[in-house]
Each structure stands twice: as structure tokens, then as C-alpha cells.
Length: 59
Image (cartoon, rainbow, N blue to C red; front, top):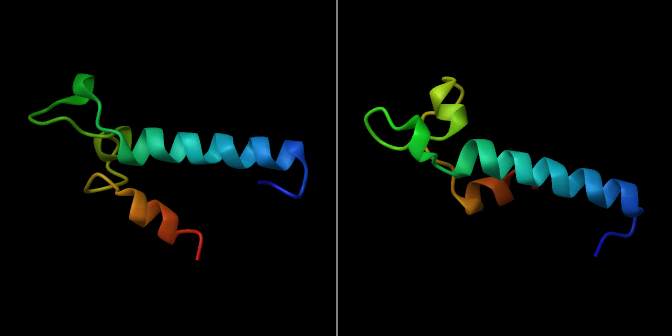
């Protein structure tokens, strides 16, 4: 539960969604030769991130 306000919770949820979408979710349409994430296709990441790696950013 977010205690800093609804706007802050919404912004945090949106940021988490975009992080997962771009770094942890492989997309079939980006397959060349295997499904990749948008971050991998852009050259920002070299592997599909796990939820543990994303949670590690909170530390």
C-alpha cells in the first residue's frame, strides 16, 4: 500500500509497468533469431531481466 499519495502510487506503478514491458517481457515480433525485449532490440540490455533483477533496483 502506498502512503505518499495516489499520484505517487500511480507514477510508481506506471514506471514499474514500463520497466517490465521493455526489459523483462520478450516480444515475438522482435524475434531475430529469438524473441527479444525492446531493450535488447535497442542495444540497451543484453538479456531478459528477471523479476529478481528488477526488485534488486529497489535496494
